[in-house]
Image (cartoon, rainbow, N blue to C red; front, side, top):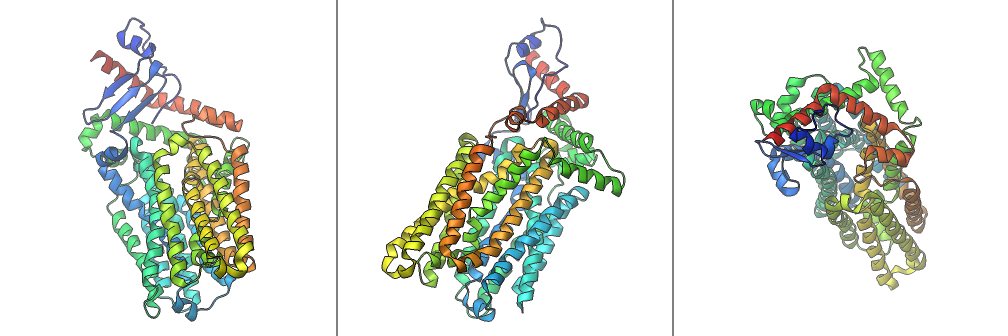
Length: 567
């Protein structure tokens, strides 16, 4: 979207009017005949471009890309739906009667999906690069449907465990593929809004999964839990159908050297004909940017011609994440995911009714309604952050959120210690505990919920971003697995201790953010280098500038600026 450095092909004639305008610090704006504009900023140091306005108007203008992103975000919906539905299934009368299980078995049933998701997330990137994003999503949905079918038709606990493990592979792969595909098809001015659909879809899935289970809980027999487990197949089938119509990722096509196909796909996504795309400077710029990115990856890691060299290059690339230049950034990606999960949010989502009972509320209907509110509060809390995250910054949200989460967990723990022996006589204290649960959920929804998905993509320079983000995602699933596994056991040991554990983790998150996490909102690669005491971003900027010069992107920008000034 924006280049950096100084263009080396600016004209030398200082008497020339367009040269004077650029050198005098006046931005030059070039308007496209199809709408949108390109701006060459003062002194020709950088440029920016948009296909149209931001916000809702921009989404309406880029309606085809929006439609594709909505289809892709169904992968996030599937992840969220499972989080929401399992909380109800575990406390349904027929389910508990049919399969009485120990807390450890309950934890493993929940956590085995995350274990499968870890495998799916790590494998997804390999298949996505070697085949395509669409085909990989297609296969992931089929795997998810197989797992969901096993769960819905389960005749034994083994079927449930296998179904959740297999379904987890599909969910984990989709959690990597969906945002990757959305980022690669989005126009620059609405990329943030389209990427936000993933988090929106996850939270929406949590709400839908929980409340569908709530409304089926009183159906006689196994239909009470088979229906909500079976319904999750529907969105996966919709995505399977959508994959046959989704355009290929133009960025991947460029990486594979299939330039004609990439231009055709990009034209389709931007609602241009192929002839219009050949003449549209906006399409030319975006296409050249993709070529620059692909060239950087090839120059960094080379192109392997056999499986042995490919494996060696892949290993070197992953090992570089833990080298001197990237080690601190890698730890930011891993630890933001760690603290996101150990804040306790998924313990509430997976075991909401059980946790609510431990803070004094009784009656199946009441506990389910209160725990169902957790998803709704999180859904509402995410909305303002999507709109204002760049204005508020990452660090203030993380620090404020971690303090609020610490206080909430600590207060719940104290209430349990004081009143657990006789909740009936202290119903007000129980409802105060519910208030703290909702306060925690809102704080999470405005801090570690969305920011943990944004931060990893910002701390890594371009050539290491995909692997850095993949490692961060793997950290999410590993810690999600551990939380799902141990929460039932710790609750049986001590409910107060469980909340105190989450309070300590949230407080440690505050200390870590205060001393180790930089503010990345609207910060350049050079400034991030200074924060991490590394030259990785600056070295990459120099390489990028040279590739832009070699491919003619900088010359194109100067030519557009000169033509506009002449007009």
